[in-house]
Image (cartoon, rainbow, N blue to C red; front, side):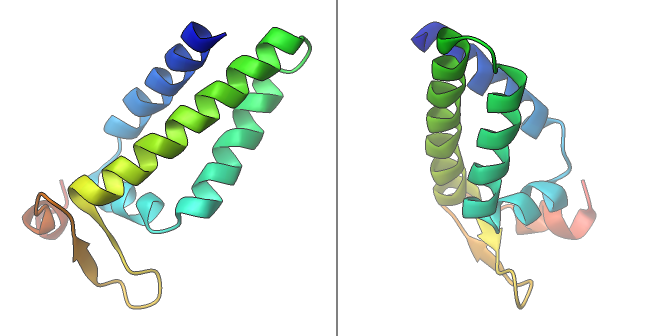
Length: 99
């Protein structure tokens, strides 16, 4: 169950790494909505057995921790103003370049 949840979280992290920096910051700007959407999608995908639902719940929990970590590491953009809030690493130059 924990291993399956870790694999689910790793898969979502790999998907997240393929996005542009601008898209990453947009997703990190809405952490609650991102948590809810991730939980709904992976629960729907793993519905049918108790172990599948529990793996989805563990995966959603791990993704939630990763979202908090990403907001602290890279920062996020303010939803209303679009202003970049710096994390531990400044990625504002990547946002300007559009990479």
